[in-house]
Length: 338
Figure 1: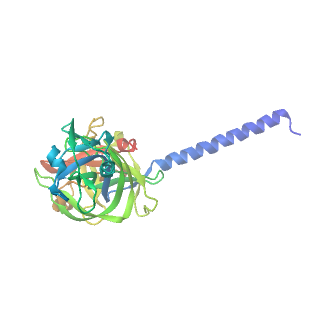
Figure 2: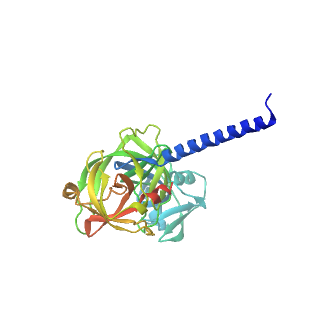
């Protein structure tokens, strides 16, 4: 039989082995978490907002002729419908749901120029359907094109844009989800001094990249689709902003089709602590990219920036008066956001 002393020694060895195994597993998991896949390919975004904006006033065909309840009570294009009879309106379907209830009066609360305003409104009954209508055209989604920065396959996440989707007053738009699709760029409007260019593309509705979850100061983030194929993407390590040097670098972006290409740039300034996430000033050096697009155009936001073989950040903004120059955000800030 084993002595008490030998039993304790055996237990001690077993505990040490367990610690070693767990430490090794943790290190491997940590290393995998830090391994990313390079983006640079275009994406089409359909984001669900948490507000319902009036984008037009229209007439309703009723048994008594044409009527426009919204126009008659004073609702205008640009108003955000916040409540109807004190019930929250967060998507367009909420309007129809509340109007279908049997109220004698309807009070519409809107946000106009940051202020709440109330309007008493009597909906009109549609001649064809019998459904009560306000006579408004509204939107509760935002659509656009941008670029995916990286895929974090181990955590099944993606990051894009490098800057937020904002409204006309530069406020970050709150979202309640959305879809991110593959996209094919069919045209690039060339940027010139004073007029930014843009990518024009078509959504690939059958190619879902993932579900949008967050719109924040560092971009659009979300959960990767189970069917997303990352087998052709480049695996890459990230570099801290402390390692970024003024000098040669490159971006990966797409100006035709859906496959990214590498283009030469230079880092001309590094601002590590910039509060607006403008951590780099970059200059496009690649003659092919300048010839075709003029430099940085709308839709390139999120294009990954690589230096010395490591991911250091993403393109975010273009200089209006010089489309060959723009800003970039450091990758550490993007990685810490979702």
